[in-house]
Length: 620
Ligand SMILES: O=C(O)/C=C/c1cccc(O)c1
Image 1 (cartoon, rainbow, N blue to C red):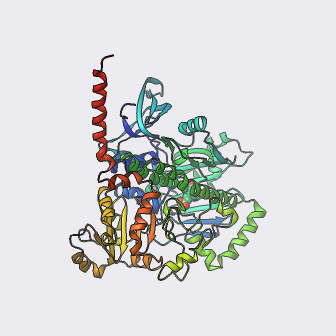
Image 2: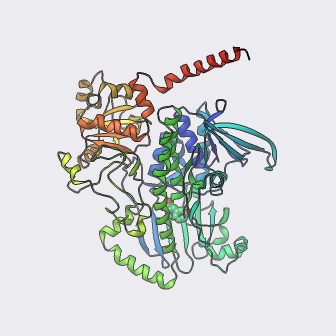
Image 3: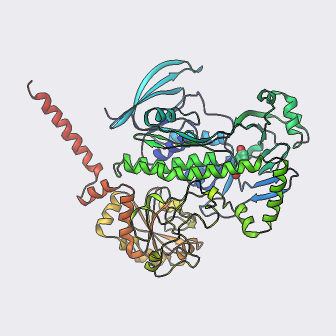
């Protein structure tokens, strides 16, 4: 195949495809987003923005532009038919740098994501382009594209070539069907038939800012205050109510009457009838073709996780594609996309399906549920379980780009997170995690008295910090958007070998030393001339983190997850094991030989050209 037109061709200009394109663009890769529609989807869909997603948007350099379309601390209250609050979800922590939940207006955020692509030379969005076929080769994919006019009529066809294709075109994904036909990928799970009507109004007649999940046996409903004066309702439709009924003003008035003083005075932006799905593709990648977002998984709305799960996909995939495209890692790294994301998505679907059953209880079960909830609310740990969002499975990778903390061997961390664990009760606080082994504890000079599990596979915290060049910034601003090797109270450059440091430099890895802010000036002076950035722990959060995790050195992945954690003296071993886990053997071998694969490529290409010329000169 000739050299591809683009590194990554992304099908679908929804939030996932656009975020992925922005992350690739920010890391210097080319990405083309093809959207069959003539415009972005303009009605509100996702409404809840998690802190993890905000961290990604900030990495893409877009959070400052997006924040104005959000409202912070979007509290979720689960109420019964009498309007009594059974559980409140109002987490107060900011471990990843942002308020845990925001409400947001998706179409406006999508617009910013689309506009963000203009910042990069290599990223582009084309509307009116429908992908009609994929042909995979050893070194790329031919993508057959139909060009559509404003009426979605085909006016032309073209073939584009891409190194990789990502289907992010939503639930009715062409790419997923193609993977099903060509590679046997299935879309497993359930699609309950219950219909819900969603209505968005632009003149919020209630004016309360947060989310109510109304488990009302008379008619379950959702009422959500959103930014810019918008309110969303969702009403469950009973089986004997025909879908067409929702178009009659009388029926809408009947639905709104228990909630709004004057239903006739609301101004509807749009309404739709939808059903929930709990489905996940059996694989998110086959060869050079991948799935992301709703194309890969669909889940009910209850925890606002459809949008956020898609952004997690983009976050996980973007750095891996970049590493492979840069020639740093082999394609095996892309296999970890499925192995890391699939289990978390499956667990999230389980929690959401369970929440749906609680919402839908009839009068008898509903009465029992209310009594149980009232009794359990008296127990502080149960109350905290809901209020602190502990039932939401956090991504935790026990396989993939992780290193076992006890043995410092690649590919598996010493914790396990079981997909579908909710049903077995394994996702209760403190369960579902294997404790560090006795050997691991003995290896360390001290251990967390609470027996905390290894931090490997978890997202690293993001406190505010200071450096010589930046005062009071979020940690990611100081570490950048690629790999980071970080030590508490040590210069990581002094913990690594000369070969390690050569590799660190070639791969653009950041070295950071965390110190109490009071010692920053001392450390900066002491490490003058070192490639390390000294980071002042202005809040004490970093010290607390290392205090309770029995490690003094961590390898942080470009997506901010902890790949490895070790004692200071084991830094080199932890680093090398991470490179193996991330299939960076290509880069490692090249570095040992004194050159990187990227450096060799032009020479190899030149040799090929020369050889081709010679062949042509040989007489037949
Ligand atoms: O953001 C959340 O936690 C919940 C969002 C939500 C809940 C119910 C229905 C929705 O459309 C969104």
